[in-house]
Length: 321
Image (cartoon, rainbow, N blue to C red; front, side, top):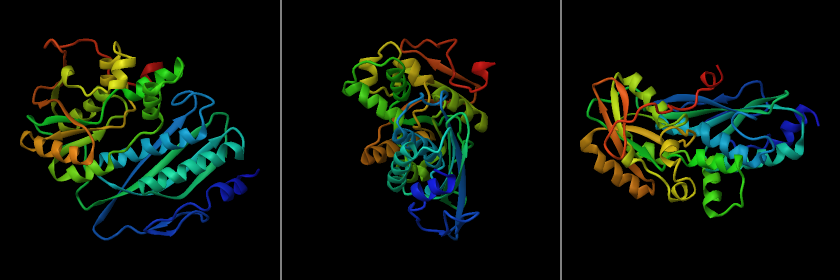
């Protein structure tokens, strides 16, 4: 099947939401940004053999790709608007592309984002890229800078689950309820869109946790010119993670990566209100440490001693240098 027939068959009926003047089928999408809003844009790429195992079901790749990309919009407290998609495919296989497109369309509808264009090409390695566009009120985008000494470090959800889900795929066993739940966390990230938008007036800074808590918190510290201390005893760990991987749980919560939860800077007098709002929304929000004037990131173990030599997180190039 040719490229244009693939596009017509799989994507031409994509949902067109508000602000789409011209979507799929022209050289460019024409989009209308509402008055008083700013456009925020991010892109995410998944490469076979790097981000997912060969033979992974296309529907699972669709939900993982879109969840990871839209999580960046959550990190800025933006509302999802539009999506463009770039696919590098080893072959024009409709049996692969149709379930991918169907799952992408369903997840896009759930997240309120419209597919408005993209590109397909042939290549040796399956590569999937999603560029997402969101809207935020003028001057209200949540950024990495802005944390202050004394602010508390809050993280949403539980950490380490995605890394554990990957482990169950790398070393497969009979899939019980815990393993199925951890794999769901790997394949279907849940962007914390509603949480970020509701908490935005109380937040100083934030970002999503894609490379691991320590690695991403370091980005926030660098942007804000601060240091911090994280308390391991406070880390939010899921029951499934603790049951299946008790020895690795703490390390994966710190550095496992790809949880796509939020890491937020919150003034001490706003913590209780933020946690109450998160509870109302059904999302755990845990205080795991403090921003400090002293530079550097320190991790305190459950016994109160500072830990040394911790793995900071995944780096695509440093790992293979």
